[in-house]
Image 1 (cartoon, rainbow, N blue to C red):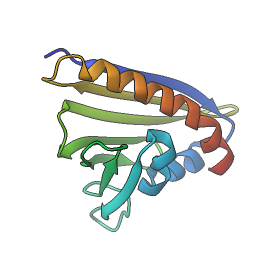
Image 2: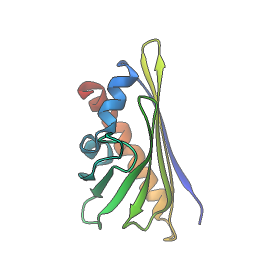
Image 3: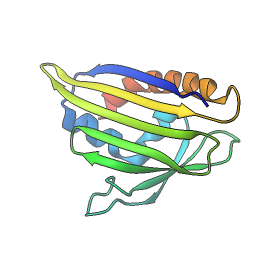
Image 4: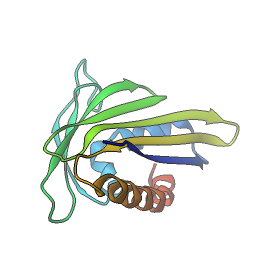
Length: 142
């Protein structure tokens, strides 16, 4: 089972604290992923969106699945995994936020694999399109 990757780099004109805070909110990811997103639980240690927080995603008619945040370093890094209900395996999403003279360098990596032939490359292509299209809205709303 070969892993496939989404890799997106984008420069925002707003500081990392603003971009991080916006993308850390599970509900704000609906447009980014092109999915219905429902918060399932808040994170541990008083961090609403931190480690242990979970969301359910529903993409069109497909069965829903859950993602759980596994690393949360304000305002530098968010890491999450699919933890329930998906034919994807080895899924790992990592968002990094680095300060630049003009704002924020955002790097988003997602690793995806599936035992279903052809599924991972289709998901990667769809996610790349959806995330890339959503970045202007993130800039506006953050």
